[in-house]
Image (cartoon, rainbow, N blue to C red; front, side):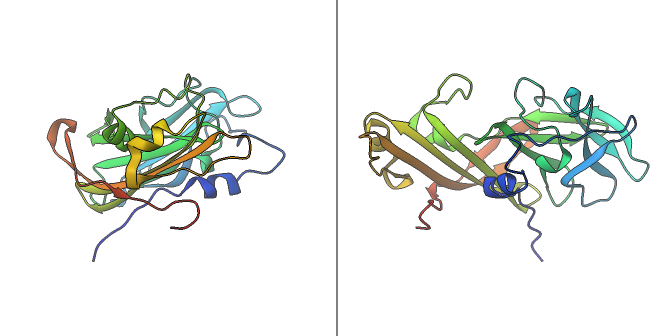
Length: 232
């Protein structure tokens, strides 16, 4: 039987937040390491948990690899820090473990409508950050710097594991541009409705199978159009 473990979409992330708060907050107990959404590994021996200090949980906030069932800290996960995260509540972080518990993908918000997707190889007591393929870069040759390129309004990457070394990666983004130059590069992977103010809302949606190999290398299968906001 095929085991599928998926990171939820951005819509579910927004639904978990109350209208009164732009961020998800949590006041942690001194020794509270709260397991994030789907954070328990299939093998029952590992989990991913968050912890922070202060009234809103943002002081010295980190996400940790934990040993189970004793719930003991093993390692801090790299590339989740106050420089690139918006939320501090455990339910605002989403894990997708590979069926053999040797990889885990973590998704979280960098900005209100922008997600970050990290992938870690579990090597004993540590979690090694490895590169996630960029389907937009594969299509356009362009890497979007989230903090500096304000034309990208939403970004939703998701992972669905198919085997211990292969997952389905989806990449959905929306840009607002003055012209349709970007859309010309996207082909069937893009849609470009014109806005009332004359600008273009350019939607990119793609998916592909990704196969991992040793050393953090990967092979990307054929890119295919993903689901667009209008359901097509």
